[in-house]
Image 1 (tube, one colour):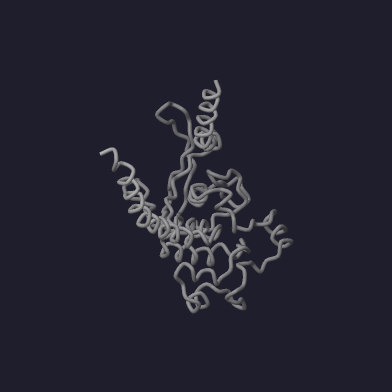
Image 2 (cartoon, rainbow, N blue to C red):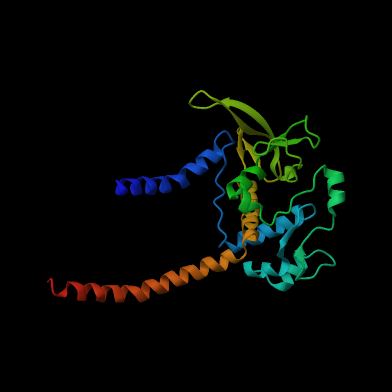
Length: 254
């Protein structure tokens, strides 16, 4: 009886991680896979440039400092020349000049700090959100989002992506679902024979998502690198010991 109970508890523990994501996504939009790689320093550098040029005017990342960008392969000179705002110092936090009171008055709500947004939302959510804007005349900004309905943020990358419209289609099971359709190409998208080519725009949004994941835990890059070394070291160290132990154990048997 006790063994049976232990087996049931173990089965439930194994099933729980699989059940939670399914429950969390139930009824929500289907998220696209971001397929990010925080070991890809070139992607992180491109993402940092997009973040500073397009996001940092409204959204801060107060838990991140500019000098931490050296961890992704940038030199202090490159950071100062290309990413550091005028008057800021290399050791400063990535804050915005706009105060919260003005932000709330102008936008209706204070734009959130993005330091931990990837840890709270997930890479797939952010990637889908950045690519999920569509024209909606009923909204104050003229934009809405498939992932975040009635979003207050305008589509700051619309010139890159172009215009999308929300369509209602039936899936293979006959159920209605919402789908975005590119109706006007941007500078980084194309309409070829009625089909949308968004490869370059998707790559830039993946780079930005990659950077947002990085600033959520900057130490993760080095932690993973150290982890690979430790695993390799332990493998090289323990394999001979385990092999010798095995020979000693089975020596009398054979």
